[in-house]
Length: 364
Image (cartoon, rainbow, N blue to C red; front, top):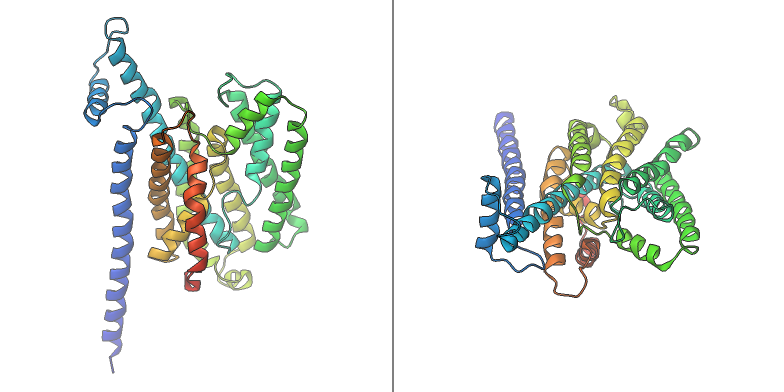
């Protein structure tokens, strides 16, 4: 029989191994994100070798300027790499990380592995905002949703469902199941309003709204990065600071309250934070599904459910997943580019089904 000291030493040794595995997992995906970022710069319709891509990138970073008249082809290739491929890859990292962290927080506060960042209805609200903006003529160009009026409209409308749930919260019992049902009801309400709006508009508008609805990162520029980057970084830092409290959310509200945690208040605060994170992303590129649903699942299966590690692991796993999907979407040789949201759904749906079949209940 082990003494108390030996037993404590064994527990500490086991905990150290468990912590090392978590840190190793996070470190591995930091490396994977860097590698996928470099690979993503070579993916696209313009056929450029790896050496050419990094040669142009090095020249740009060292201040080399190509003459548009005398060196048009080199100027054109360098412009594609720096002004389109680099910001698109960076946005994929920000979006993947932000949606994954939002999904991890949503699943924790809702105590539901089927929850994702769109549970409160923000995607339906944003879709209505985009459709309304396009019908009113806020789109700067015809090729996609690229007007700031459209982006602002999408962000405002995406927060309306959250505001509605917050205003209704005094009349609800604020339990996770009630909030999910309220989010579902609000989502259907906004979807019906969008349908009414779209049946009265022309085919070109339907095409633009459809591209946004399935998640499209084509034609992103540097201007799209600051807003989601700032919001997602601030949101991730706040949620990481609340990670110990999020761990207590796995308990019943009355048990958490006995430990000094107001579960209902924390749930509403987290809903507002993660909704801002998700809306800042989907307002620029549309609805990218399954990232915030399956990434936190897979992270928990590997490293457990401690949010102190789940949140940072979700940052890098989510970034790697969306980068990988974006590389595939740009590498498919078809006449029209495949939206990244189609690829995330194509890959994410079978993975999610496998997770449901082999779900380990001790994760939750």
